[in-house]
Image (cartoon, rainbow, N blue to C red; front, side, top):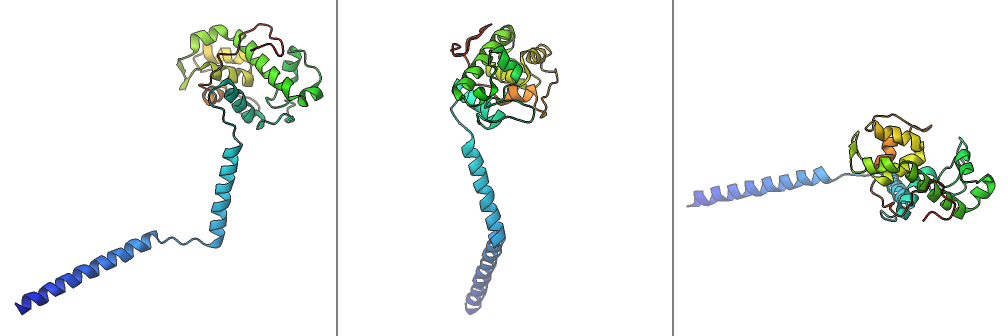
Length: 212
């Protein structure tokens, strides 16, 4: 009986010793030590990411959401921006496009947010008219891996012009275009898909301030 008791004590002791060692090993696996510089770097990265996210406008999938998303991509939503190629304002208009809407004073354009907003709506309205048949034929289809939506088409037309978007749609998405920064029609089609642009009227000769 005494021998059995001693054997039992030895077995129990071994089991508890094994469990204690396992616990210590597991603890060491997750005991990661950060030095002061590492912690500072991680915190700075987290702050930077949060700051960047907080700058991105969010207005759902409405037309307001659409135009603000395009604006953020074009200029980070800044009305006074002129890029190195001479494109102007929040939506980065070219001078030739502005002349189409009888806007000749670029300084006034840059300093008048309402005019910039109206010009963007006018361009969407014109592009919707130029691409009206392509919109009807193409929306809902998949081309070159991208689902075609009206908002994607209008955004791509803002980037590349309605004529290049026609070529993209009529070649099943195989027409290659990229702007001076390397941005493609396909990228804009995908990035700006799914917004509600139904309130934009398709007009052959849109007049500033009378599009919606």
